[in-house]
Image (cartoon, rainbow, N blue to C red; front, side):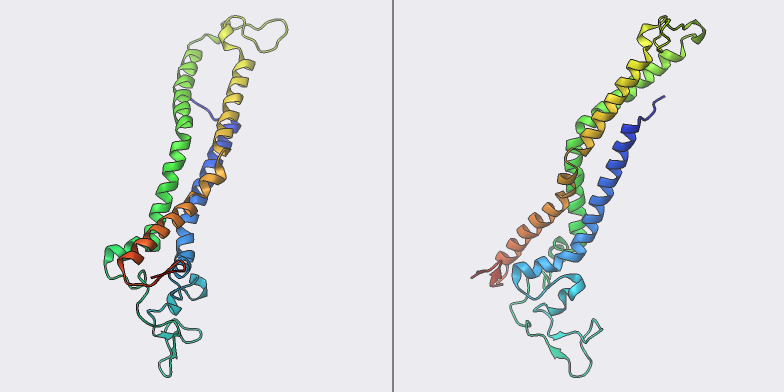
Length: 227
């Protein structure tokens, strides 16, 4: 009993694109950047996952052989970063502690935070669309009960229903278009700020976890701060 205007279809497309883009960031960025941010905080040797990742971390005694993820079986190359105290993240003993800085944990936290922000900003639209659904269903039901043979138009033939003035089709079409434009404006407003929420969440969460791990261990470095 309800149809979508072109603008409302745009809304759905924008919404789907935004959710998928945020989900992709939430999944991909931790896998690429988690170890880089570990190295940035602790100067332990960790780097981007595509550039070696944890292979140069100070918990690794030897560097991997060229073209391999493991050290050479004979005459392995020593890792210049190797030495205690070990990196607090990469050397986490507790399963809970290790999970808190795991990329999969970051993915969950980043995407859930995005959903919370998006739903909060879209709450007005959600209320309006529910109201519109109810209104459209009631309006269509009322229209279906009218004997269309009794409807006459005025001499100007402009689509105005003289017999049932409340069914002024040009006005109804304009009303629907205005609503669709409002919905589209609502979804487009803040698009990029919401898409950036997973990034903000990543840096805030990892910085807090980095500080906690640093204070809870005997590691000497955190973002250039020595103790």
